Every structure is written in C-alpha cells, then in structure tokens.
Length: 374
Image 1 (cartoon, rainbow, N blue to C red):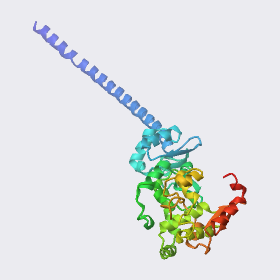
Image 2 (cartoon, one colour):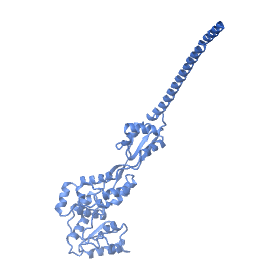
Image 3 (spheres, one colour):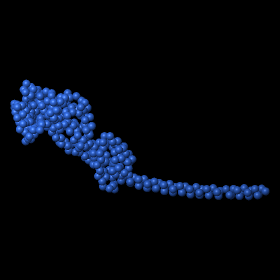
Image 4 (cartoon, rainbow, N blue to C red):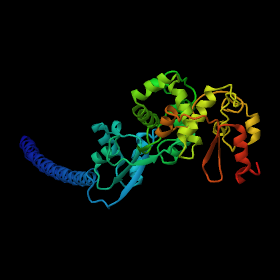
C-alpha cells in the first residue's frame, strides 16, 4: 500500500512538469505572433502615413496639379472659411483642413485682404496666402479716368462700374468720414455732396475692390497737391474762399464749350460784382438748376424750382460747387478775362456768343434755329 502510494505520488510528480513546458512554448509562440502582428501594423501605418504625407505634401507644395489660373474676389464681408471654400471650389487646394492648419500655424489668416486676385495651381500654400495679401503683385487693379465736370454722384457710379467700390459704401465714407484736409474743415459732415468740387478729375489706378475711404482719399490728396499754396494765397487775396472759388470754377466747367472758360468767368464776376446792373445779381445759369433737379432745364424750372441752386430765383453764388472742375476751369475762375459782358448763349455753331446787354442777347437768340421752338 505504501509502495502503491509512492508510485502514485511519483507518477503525479513526474506528470507535473510536462504541461508547464507546453505552456512556455505556447507563450513564446503567442509573443512571436503578437510581435509579428505589431511589426506588420507599424509597417502598415507607416506606409499609410507616408502615402497620406505624400498626398498632403503634393497639395501643400502644389505638386502634380493640372495647370489652371483663377481670378477670385474677396470682399470685406467674406470669412476665412469663405476664402478656403473658394480655393477648394476652384481646385487651388484639395485639403481644406490642411490649409486651415497651415494658415493657423503661419498666421496666414491675418494676411489675407479684400481684393481681386489672380491665382494659379502652381502656387503652394504659402504663395496662395501671399497672393491674397494687400500688397500682392497678383492683385487686380483698374485704370479709371474721371472726366472734368463729373459730379460726386457720377464719380461714385463710375467707380462702382469699374469694380472699385459700391456707391453705397462710397457715399457712406464721403458723408461721414472726417478727412484731414484744411479745405474741408468748415464743411459739415452728413452728406456725400460735401466733397463736391474736391474730387480731382484725373486718371487713377485702383485695386479692385478697393477700400472706399482710401479711394476717396486718393482723389482728395491729388486735389491737395494740385491746389498749391500760391493758389490758396491768391484765392485769399481775392476776397473769396476756396469753397466759393471752386463753386465758380464748377459753373465754368459745366457751362464752357471748351474755348471760353475765362470769358464765362468774366460774366459771372460781372454779375456778382455789379448787382445794380440789369442782371440784378442773378447768375441765371441753367447748370445749377440741372444739378438740383437732375433733368433737362425748362422755363418752368427756372421760374419755379425752389432751391438755392436755382440761380434764376436766388441771387449770388449757389451753396457750393455743382461738379468737380479741372485745373483749366479753376485757373479761369482765379484769372477771369476783363470784360464788360453780362450775357452769353450757345449758338447753332456749338459755340457761346457773348453780349453786354439783354437786348443784344435777344437779337442773337432770334437769329438762331436752336431757340425758334423754345
């Protein structure tokens, strides 16, 4: 019995180690399997990341893209997200999130400005951001020639038509921004026509679109430079203000046939300076009524339009310029011819004819087909 027990114990003791050796073999195999799986996963992930990185790099560095040039316009109302979407829609970028991250890390969002820009698929992320900045060489501009005698209303419409800024925004800046020029110091804010006479007619280069305040300031700076200190002193010596002188110059600009500015100036001054004459201080200029009504002037308008711009009903100068005169008209206002003329009228030949008396004017009008049916 004791021997059988010892055999049993011996058998149990001898059977013990074999399962433990098998467990070690299985554990080693599992570890090798896991290691192999891990290596495969690492390699796979690395390959995937490499592929993603390559694709991302292609987009970020503008590699392997089909050649394409796009003109996009960014307004002040556009968000950065709007800009990113527009770039994506035009195939300039493929991964919007990646572009957002790049812009966030490089401060690119703050560099993007309103404007019209010409971009292409050869431009990498950095070049795209630079190409949409305020000083970008890709920014579109437009040449705008403002004719002499245009009103503020006409100038602003022209700028809108050329894509510089909207009439609404230009009117807002003209009416309410206090531009730092001495000649505007005594002109109250609140109406865009406060700048009438001071938007110098010239040829300008503007970005499109442009900040309306900057566009207006460009024209005012130009006037400020053209209207020299010597001219300002001459105006002061004449007894008129700059505003009054520009009012006279604007009437000359709207009335002239192109050859008679200084002679028209003499008629205006003769009427202003000799109110006892038969004109009684009335300027009787149709262009001032046209400015007030915006329509062709009739005899009814001359007799009934109750506006300080009606120089048939109100004596002396109108409240301000009725247009933006060029330098020839400004100089004519400052240096009128010395004459005894008080009347003029446009003849059938397209030129103005001047007279000292009303009787002489009436005789001329009776001889012109232009006035037969009026």
